[in-house]
Structures are given as structure tokens and as C-alpha cells.
Image: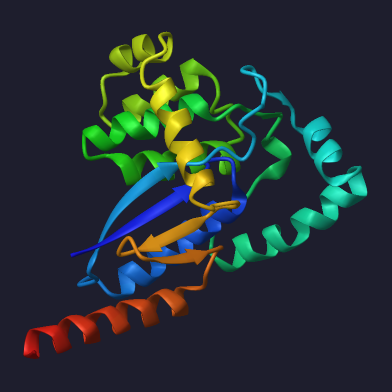
Length: 216
């Protein structure tokens, strides 16, 4: 197996698109060599704990409503191409994602990490839920057959918060500046929401390399 480390944030639309494209390639190649692990990277590490109004956030980030609309036009197009249901009008707040990353971490301990990532993307981008809210995160945990009561108690504590911050900081120190970033075999970084065809080629190249090493 080949490790595929993925750095992402559950409020990053390009991360969602990138995951969908990867998923399509993996479904087309069920004998792919990857074992996947998700890693935290906050787009807005300085976001207030309670998040902020999404319209105000976007207009501040992109220099007004027109800038925000222009920035999201290619996202809407690419999401549709990837078969994703993107309902931006339902999103009222941009959350701080530290707690969402803690949930992903705990889900990973139980072997449900990718399912947690998928559930968070859907909750935020399709259902417009506030994934910084502890009730929402506990409900998502329950949908993953995790113990929601335990998750809620953990969320109300500082459990693993510093671990998430340190892992995020380590990625930045290693040179990661944007997500999604995919690291293949702990050696090759693949940035951005790459199309399924690229992943199909990567899988083919890895198979060829494994076969050549086997013959050697």
C-alpha cells in the first residue's frame, strides 16, 4: 500500500471538489494502492471561536460582493462537474473549524475518518449547517455511529485542540500554503483539486513502479 496524506479544511470548497474527483478515480480503480489519512489545515486559524457572518466574511476576504461572486463562479462550475450539490445560499456563518478537525481526528481513531470528512462537507456545503456548533458536530458523530455523548463531552473540553493546532502549524512550516494538498508516498506533493484523470494516471504509474520493483 502507498500512503496518501490529504491536508484539507471542511469549509474549503476546493477540498470538497478535490475529494470528489479523487473518489471518482478510486471507484474506477478499486484495486488502487492508497491508504488515506486526513490532516488538519485551517483556512482561517484566527477565526473567532463562534465564527462570523458568511456574507461579511466573504466580502471582507474578496473585496466586496462582486469580488466574492467572481471568486465563487469557478467553484460553482467545478462543483457541478464533480456532481456535488453546492447550496451556498444556505450557509449563514463561516465557522472556526478547529472543533470539526477534532471530530475528524477522533473519527480516525475509530476508523471512520473519511466518512467524517464526507459528512462535514455535506453538512456545510449542501445542508448549510454550522459545523462549528457542538450540537451539529455531535449529531454528525451520531450519524457515523460514534458515541455522540462522548464526542460532546470532548468538544466541551480542550481535548486534542493543541494537537490539531500543532499539526496545522507543522504543515505550514513544511511549506504547505493552500489546500487541498495531497502527499503521495510521503514524497510527492500534489496541490489543488486535480481531475480524476490525473489520479488515474498516478495510480497507473504506481502500479507500474510496484510491478517493476517486483520483477527486480
